[in-house]
Image (tube, rainbow, N blue to C red; front, side, top):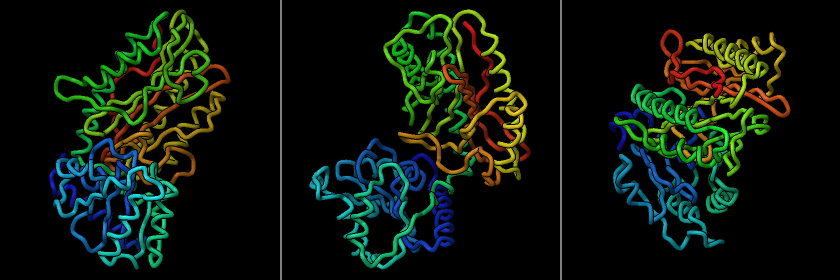
Length: 388
């Protein structure tokens, strides 16, 4: 169990308050990050059906896990053993059998089958078949989307969570410094990523790393005009830029960072664009404080881009914390125009600025924490274009 039981109880209370506001009696949470948040459960078992049940009148959540994974529930969660329920192996990849057929039986046995049930309709791994199985198995229930209820409960972190993110930030710094060292002309991209991953897993002397929710992103050359490209076995070329986006991870908490490396001679256009990018990031960072909205931060960011005539259509930030593949974002607030989410102390987000121009681009980012009076950066590493 990662946190004291009191912290998990506070989380459960917060989630139940949101359930009451939405008129939800029973919450079925399929998102592995939400399962972790609610119970402490942490395992690579999210590739198949599993969930946490939260009933408005129950003192503890229920973990619903594959039989093969039930030991992980005993080890990782704070809930009593009676609240860790497993489904038989006969349901595993044996269509038309499905684990949620057993889940609906459990809900009926507990006489919750006439409740209003909240489902994470847009959660990764919550498949159409999961939904159809619940609808068919519980015809007397009313189902509704939770609208990322648990995700929103996670947005404001505890001080204990902030501490874990600070550890993750140190690992991120080590990983990025390694990237600066190993990206050289003639080196294969995959070899560089091997060294970067080694640094991220190795962590520091005080605390170790973990796998990230997103692979090392490494667009290079013309690839810098496209987001989310990964490494190949091609070699880095003198005169080309490479964008590195990584995250250190500690106890599933992430602190992402992006930087850009240029091999060879200085390129004034890229240098100037990176300066404008960093000026925009600084403007957004300076606007990050309690009481301001995500929109306020975005407006200050885009004012700088407008000044330089730089167009950027994508958002420039999103909430972060616990993460599992395929995303380290919390799918809640966005740093974008029109998002009226009010910033509070211990809200954490990744403010990322990728500038793309057809066949080239640059990128930099920071992970931030909103403090009582302003904000602070988790990492301390120059955002200037790194020229080798």
